[in-house]
Amino acid sequence: MSADVALLDLRLRRRSMIGYAVGMGVYGFVIVALYPTFKNDTSLNQFSQGGSTVAALFGANGPLTTPTGWLNANLYANFVPLIVLLLTIGYGAACLAGQDENGTLGLIVTLPVSRRRVAAQKFAAMSLLAVPVTIVTALCVVAGRGFDLTVSSRGLIGVSLGVLLLGIDFGALTMLIGAVSGSRGTALGVSSALAAASYLISSLAPVVNWLHPARFASVFYYAVGDGQLQHGLSPTSAAVLLVVALVLFLSCAEAFERLDVH
Image (cartoon, rainbow, N blue to C red; front, top):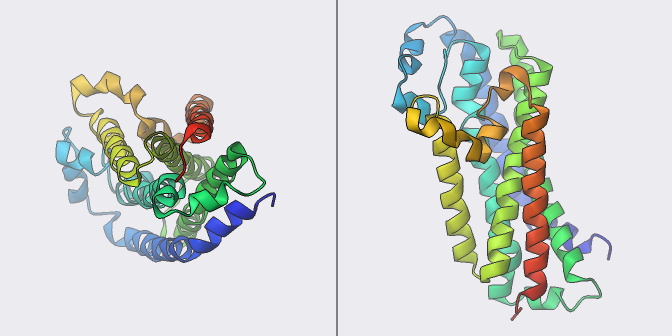
């Protein structure tokens, strides 16, 4: 019974977890394989020069022909976080509020396991859902060394960890909203809107002056928006992401204790 709830949820979502990882692997390999074709195309850099707001919306805030610029613009500043958030937010909305709405959560809470332990197992399952995508993407980037696409190991590990913690933070937020509201739709809608706002603040802050101070309120900034692929994940950013995850989980566990399960 120690991990049965988490294992059951992972088993039920194994197809989506594997499917997203395989799809991300194919997409990631295409991106790294295309780099030699574009690395000398200086016209690409014009797209992101001069404080282009359109380029910033896609996470392109520097030269696109460098390895880090190419990977940020095509993977780590946008697409990889999106896939991870689809997994964690989707599960976060379904694992408590969704199961409460369809009547299965009532069966789970009758098991000889405390609600806090149930919440902990679901939090662990949510965290594990994001791991395959981040690992597969990182492996594609490592394979990119055969295509003249080289980044530092520190940077790759840092941005991969940042993406993973980003997904965990928003997944935990979704679980919390679901535990408070008891509504899957509310949890999904509110957390998705906050994730979108966080992304926009982080991506536009370098080119929109009045948004620049607000970047410190964006989880995206601490995960992928502060040069993590170049310099790695700083201790400060890692601490912020971990503290946010811990606070949200503890709040979720407390709210779940009070949830009137149907």
